[in-house]
Image 1 (spheres, rainbow, N blue to C red):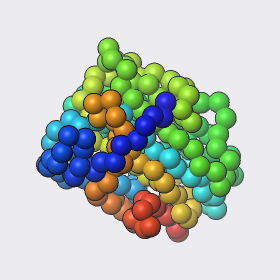
Image 2 (image 1 turned 135 degrees about the horizontal axis):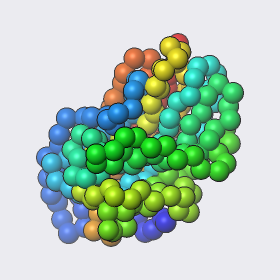
Image 3 (image 1 turned 30 degrees about the vertical axis):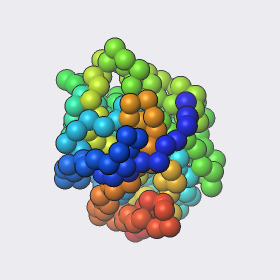
Image 4 (image 1 turned 90 degrees about the vertical axis):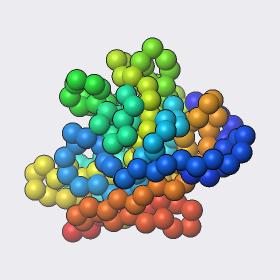
Length: 219
């Protein structure tokens, strides 16, 4: 659930003073096909045990299902080789569906549909948080909707944005998918998440505008 937010930066200020986080190359989640648009974070030190994304729900005007939300690395991954995702899917019929997924060590990707979905034009909170005993909680709007088990801690990486798998040869079309508030959990406190690397692949574009990270996709 959401908590008191402290000001902080990915490579800047945390409670207790200034520090420097060695930043690694941007990466996208392993074992999910297609194109990516969004923002990637990778660090040489494990700085978080939770990720939070307050994202809106754009209309899809064409194409197949896209995935939106936040992916957090697990199992000491610096390249999102293992991860948890929480967010929603949407396609051109504009019937968004809440969903989460995980890629645990020595396992494939497992998708978990959640009842309901966000209305077009509304914004919602998507969050992962380490619970202990190799388990991660998955929350939507501050209510737990799932648990990723047998998934060790150590979070060096994250990605927020959208994925277009393009499995049927078509691509989604949408504008202004906005990650309005990105935060990470470190030592029991939540911090603003800045300093990510923009990722743009294929038809997907990304930008940082007026304090928000935004993605768009067009044919």
